[in-house]
Length: 77
Image 1 (cartoon, rainbow, N blue to C red):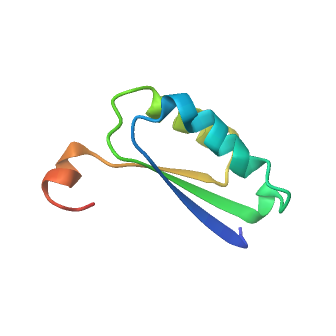
Image 2: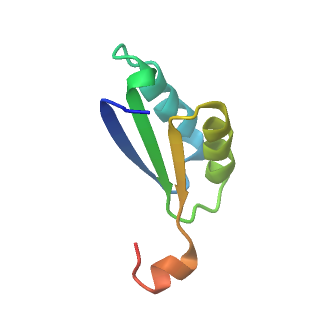
C-alpha cells in the first residue's frame, strides 16, 4: 500500500493522552487511508503498549514499534 503521509508518534507512558492523539490523526480531513502512522513506544511502563496494540490490530496502516531496554542499553535507539 502506498501512503501520501507518514506520521511518527513517539510515546512514553502516555496512556492518558494516547487515545486522543491517535484519534486525532485518524480523524484528519485528509483521510486516514492516506496516512501511515508509526507509533514508537520507548519502554512505557503504563498501559500504552496495550493501547497501541489494540489500534494496530484494528487499522492496518498503524505500525507499532516497541523499543526494549536492551536496545537502549546498547544505544540502538
